[in-house]
Image (cartoon, rainbow, N blue to C red; front, side, top):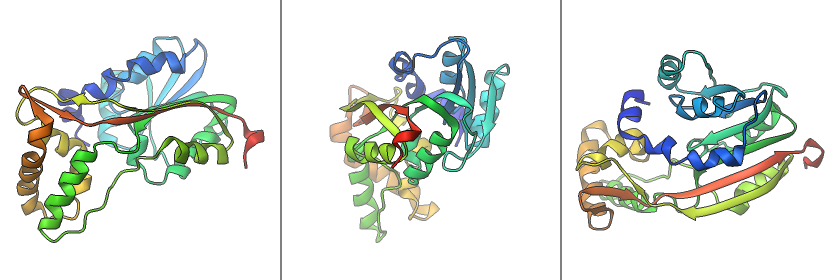
Amino acid sequence: MDSALYEARHSFVWNLAADMLPLLNPVAGERILDLGCGTGQLTARIAESGASVVGLDSSPEMIGQARQNYPRLEFRLADAASFRYPGEFDAVFSNEVLHWIRQAEKVIESIASSLRAGGRFVAEFGGKRNVQSFLNASRIALERRGYVFQNPWYFPSIGEYSTLLERNGFEVNSAWHFERPTLLDEGEDAIADWIEMFGGAALAPASKTERAWIVKEIEDILRPQMYNDGRWQLDYVRLRIRATFRPDLRR
C-alpha cells in the first residue's frame, strides 16, 4: 500500500476509530497487539495509556512509515493469517483491517494463539453490505467489458463472525453491525484516490490500460447518489466486536 497516500488523504481510517479505545480500555503495564497497525497512529494512542504496545502489519511500506513516525514504539512485519506469539498479549486490537483477509478463521486462530486466557479481542472492520454501492458499480463496469467480477473482501454478518470466534474459544461479549456513511477528503478526485488506495483489488480482473476508464465509469455511476456539495461519501457499514478468549470453551 502507498503509505504516503494513506496518511495524506485517508486519515478518517484512524480518526473515526477513536471511540473504540474506551472499549479496549488499555491499562498501564498490559501487553497489547495492534493488528494491522498501518502507519501507527492508533498504536501510539494506545501506548499513551502506559500499555506496552506492538504494532503488526503485513505491508513493509506501512511498517517502515510507522517506525519513522513513532521510533520509540515496536512494530513487526507479519501476516495476520499466520503470526504466532504464544500467550504474549493481554489484548489484541484491530481497526479496519480484517475485511482484507478472506482467511478469516486463520486470522482468528492467530489471535487466539497470541492471547493469554481471559485476554480480550476488540475489532472493527467492514460488515455485511459495506461499500455496496461501489461493489455494484464495479460489477457493472467490469461486466460491460467482459470481465467476471468477484468481491475481494470479507464482509461478514454478526452471526457469521461470532460463530467463527466461538469455534476458536472466544466468548462474544458485545457485537454491533451499523451503518456509518463516511465522507472522503474534499475534492473531485477523492473517490479516485479512495479506489487507488482501497478499491483496486475489486478491479483486479481488468488490464492496466483499462483501469482509468473503469474508474471513470464507476465515478459516473456513483456520482448521483454519492457526490453532494463537493464531497464524496461512501456507504460504509461497520462490524464491531468485543470478545474474551476462554480456551476452555474451544469447540
